[in-house]
Length: 284
Image 1 (spheres, rainbow, N blue to C red):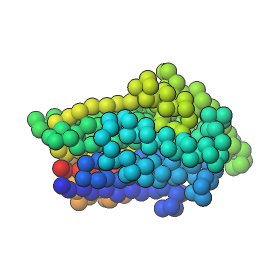
Image 2 (image 1 turned 30 degrees about the vertical axis):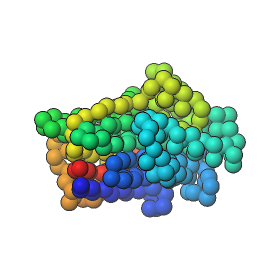
Image 3 (image 1 turned 135 degrees about the vertical axis):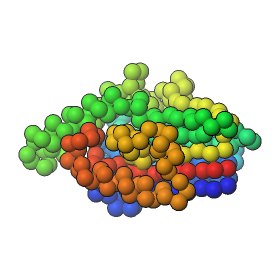
Image 4 (image 1 turned 90 degrees about the horizontal axis):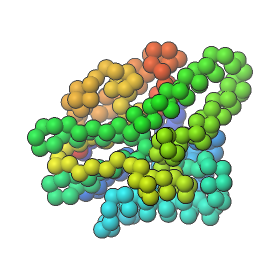
């Protein structure tokens, strides 16, 4: 088995502020992309809600990995533990509808097949034994919402002159879009410690799940896919072939460099100059 993985914090962040986490065992592989809160606050001593969510969810997945349960059940049970822990310390997260949240791609090996679960805006690419690529990008479900939010944030950045007012308006815009679209019909799924999230995703099956005859795959957070979208420099097959076990760090550095050349987001419309980026490549 071969594994290569790297994770890079987003624009302006220190390594400890990286809201992406990843993990793997011999049978299980996952990447978690914590969602930056519209009102970033420290929880349990962590820099942000998202850091706590990604770190604790990784710990719970490790703990539940040996259990003989389905992949959706494994993630559900893991998040449920986070919900109870958060609720005991900070009260019911459903009251303000803005609790710690994130996305996850998790892949499990079962004999000669893999099973894939994607919740939120993370992605995977797998090549089956016949050479066909299988691809799902959860960010495409988010795309319409993110595009409209990115346009609004750009308007705020171009018109607001006071930095404090600008930050407050952008924060309120993110909160508004989450209330309109997150875990709602016609919107997008996002894993969260709220009861609404757990019902929308697991009871209504608003997630991607697939079994594939494959022994090689890639998974990551949406920031690691910038070369495909929004930069449009590769097709998905070209991107999959471009990333090797030896160059993952260089791929993320290239992505970061291109993003910084468009730091003002004039060429490529997006919410941040660049996001946290995590990319994992596996051959069983």
